[in-house]
Amino acid sequence: MIPSSVLLDGGDEAECCILRFPDLDLKDPLPLTAKSNLKAELDTSVRKKYAFAKKKAFALFVKAKEVPAPASCAPATCRAGLWWKCCEQTFKDLTGIHRHVAMQHAPDIWQQTGLILKQLAAEAGTSTNPASAEEADRLCGPTCDSQELSDRLPDTRNISLDELTSGVGEVLLYYCYREVKDPGRLCGWQKSLCQHLHLTGKVRIASEGINGTVGGSKVATSLYIEAMLSHPLFKTILCREDFKSSAGGAHCFPDLRVGVFEEIVPMGIDPKKVSYKETGIHLSPEEFHKEVEKYLSQATAAQNDTILLDCRNFYESQIGHFQGCLAPDIRKFSYFPSYVDENLELFKDKRVLMYCTGGIRCERGSAYLRTKAACREVYQLKGGIHKYLEEFPDGFYRGKLFVFDERYAISSNEDIIAECRYCGTLWDQHQLCSSLHCRQLVLTCPRCRAKGFTACCPVCQEKQLTLASSPSGRMVKEECECTDRRQQVPAKRI
Image 1 (cartoon, one colour):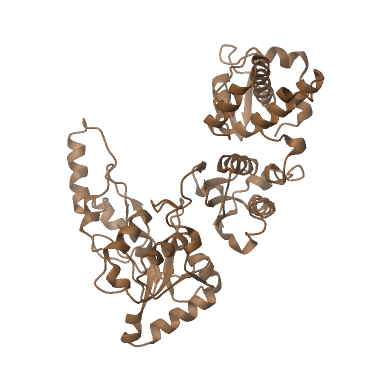
Image 2: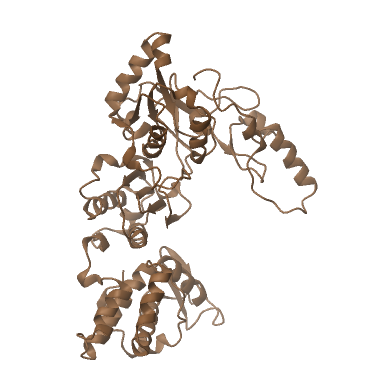
């Protein structure tokens, strides 16, 4: 972030700079309606000060990113011999740097706007006027001087850029269910935190909590964990063990995506109707291991009394699963409720042992299953397969663990349990279906791919050829037709 001294001591050059920068529509962390209502209450004078402060904050942020353009740069393409560098990118024109700052640094501009508003109020001697300092707080939230711990970023002044951006790093996976009264504010802080630490990945925020998977250097991910553990919302709930880590880094994700959603894991049901608070009984990896061992060792009658249920999508369980599990052939987690509804007899009076990648899908999935009052007992693996493999790398989970990033899978053993879709050769490396209308994950070995079998099923292969021969039609992403032909309940357990 720009130090406040830089923003507030820009001098005449900065004042001139303001006139040249547009008042871009920043992605404000406050909801638009709330911001509009607040601004409507202010008088014209204060609104003008607000607009001036935002322009000044934006202008000085951009100015701080100026670097001399190469001597070889033609005057026509170099504005006053300047380029701009930000977030390891070089921008050769104002439009590019403006767009980048507006989209990626709105929280920074937001904070500094508040600082400038307060300075203007102090200079005018009106700090006691509700339409000055108080309104600045209402519009922009607390500034750096009075910010809560939740809005502070880790101090990285003694950490080199190389340490923060090292290619050798890890990927973190975590979630936390708890009431979040202001998801927009938490979203703004998360985005600033990840950008500050050069992390990539995906973070979902909702009124029910947060769900994230981020990648970066080990220094960056360590600072991220510390920031999360010290956040007032999470410090009494989250602990270090709640963060699952695996080898990787920022390169495992194409970009950073942080947003506010209705659910932190998309099951498609209002969290108020099926709450995480109604979840099943959590079992530690050791407890779960003992339960699975007992389940696998007992006779058929005992097995009929217990179901080992994989809550993940079919392409995940395809390449790795617990021995003896029941794996629903669903493509999305939002199909899980329908799967349960259509197969309630399967769960009637049974003990259910549920598991998923990191535990989050079991939180809502077990809660939904319990609302049906069909099962005798519902248990779930705490920390998911991730935590289980940390303690039992050679346990009852065989094959690879599917992950939702560019690695596709991680492994703790050498087992290959999946087969090529076309020839049956052992193969567990997913690739996207080549049919643009589908783009489902498919297992095709190199030999079959060389023969042109690159789609997820013959239906898609045929459709791909049809579309290729008549490319005039608009491509529409749709679900593969072979999805409806799968058995929702396998004839036998895996």
